Image 1 (cartoon, rainbow, N blue to C red):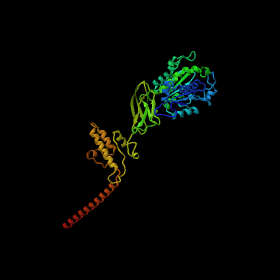
Image 2: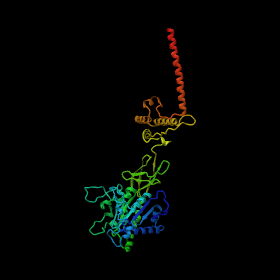
Image 3: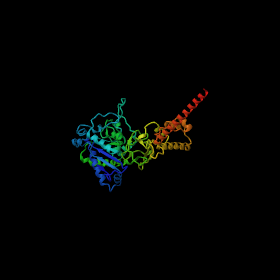
Image 4: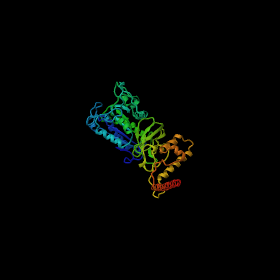
Length: 465
């Protein structure tokens, strides 16, 4: 279900956030809390300013049960055990996603495929994955690279570890008792501040939160919200009271960090542009409308953008704690030409682009016979280059050489007399006609003069005889 002021509309840059519950069918508290959350948001829109702001500015997606088959086989009142944990085919859905660290050979399940398709169709920014059986907010990575020298669990940190720690703590400290780190069972340690790195708790392969982060560009945190997996329904009111504030405040964190539009110089959106925050080696992508979002803590950052057919771009921006920063990114084509069919992906074109020259592809003859467009473009190019020499106080010999060598010109000859004959210019009809006339005239005059010389020499020889 989508809960928003206008759920059927998708205004530009309005972020999408989601909650997924009941992934393990016997962890039932989250399933019920999601139904309570939907009701609470709708009923309090006109009376709670925070709820109104949330629904006006956010598209909230809620999946109360990812594993309804497992839930049907689970038993109310069972606080532990595995009955109902798996789907109808006996698969643990939180071990069924592609993994960043290891190959996951488990057969992909319909529920897993549905969530993957969901992520492909909606660019989520923030997500909560709700479980039961413990009391902790767990953040990526859930898995770690193989390490034969490690005999105990250790943290596996993402490039956005500071953000994940913060997001986990937002939920934990808004929960009635999660942040106290009280263990669910005697003899087991609690979690400091009620948060943990997933792999530091215990590593697992095929988890959904790692898939969201690595493959979907979504910041997802797992919330273990009850020590009992499937408590009696009489306890649901208490669980709602304990978790309500955390669930609401976590949604609002989607409005932290940076957002913007990736566009070209004509203000057209660039979809699927690859984006990265410098110093954080994790790529995310712009939407089909060029939108992007990234949750970041206050500080100064540089965002880098790459897209096929465009020069890499980067923008520096500052994040404050008060509001989201809007930073649009403009990207420029790697080459500007009038006829793309003549452009080579390597060679002279790249050299012209490197020194900032606008070289247009050669065209055919002009209809009025006044010369080819390539002649005009060529002269225009020389004029631009000459202008750049006049305007620039410093231009290196290597740049000059690179420019002319890229055009296929004998540079010494070019420097000496400005000879243009080495350019590869398609001849015009007039040029061919003129050249033919020149050859004919040359042949006539040369033949006539040659015959005259022969006659004079013969006559001289006859006189000597």
